[in-house]
Length: 198
Image (tube, rainbow, N blue to C red; front, side):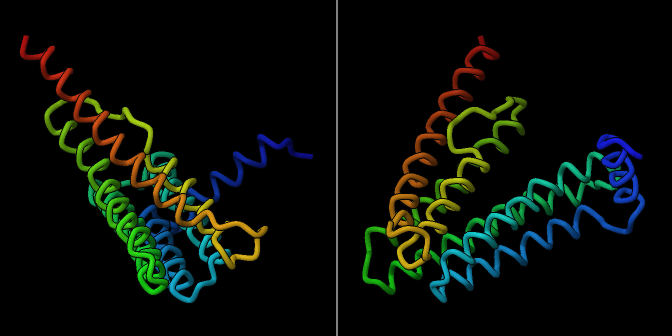
């Protein structure tokens, strides 16, 4: 009888030998996040939360699978990063639509700030690394944003899980945390470049 580690090793080997590519995993994540956005518009928040969680897990798996299988390409890495931004933006846009339809202009505006903040968190890291400065500092990394938005969706009003409304608070938290993280990264890069220029 095989041990758990032997079974994992066997499964990993079979997966690597398969025709599955990191890009296929990335595109699966996109499809699931599109489904999550549609479910938000339909106000099926619990299902939207599940689709968003699974789609986001796919987004973390594609990079890991790429490294593990040796099937990664430069274009694949570019596609992965691009789709991550699109997926988060699509779901937050659907949430903004929902709030606008409810007449909640403040929460809808919070979604816009969260989208902008999310993009800027990624941009500041990419720009810093282009300058030769590693920049992974800050609170609102992608996994943190995924957790916050997932909680908001699963515990949205009408989602059927308890009698709470956490979608708007989750959006406000994302907006605040992404803004803070951008500030942290700008400060970090300024400090690092000052040291290099000294």
